[in-house]
Image (cartoon, rainbow, N blue to C red; front, top):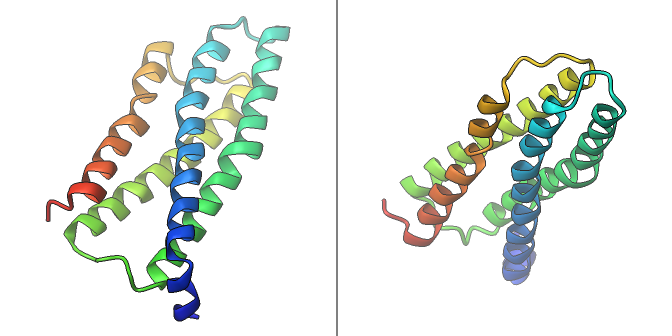
Length: 147
């Protein structure tokens, strides 16, 4: 199996990067939708449209993307061609945190759908910065491999 994975290593890597981009796009977009949703009058038709948009983004973009990102990432590890070091362990930790962030966004979408609004628009705007910071750190770790 490892031999086969090594033969398709670059295809696995390309697919992994493509689906990371899809996943990150969704992680950037969903909190922004939350901001607009939260600013819509509670119970309005506009708020209901945001519930639908958030559900679609979660089910059509985010869920498939995170699954493929993890599957291809694990396949890449299975090739034995990924140099493991401190940089990789930190990258993995950040990916785990991003996965938890994704899960939190899923829970928050359900709260908004029920009419609960536990965060302010300002908090959501700040929360929207999490994936950008995480991606910047991950790219530096993967490209520079500082340790």
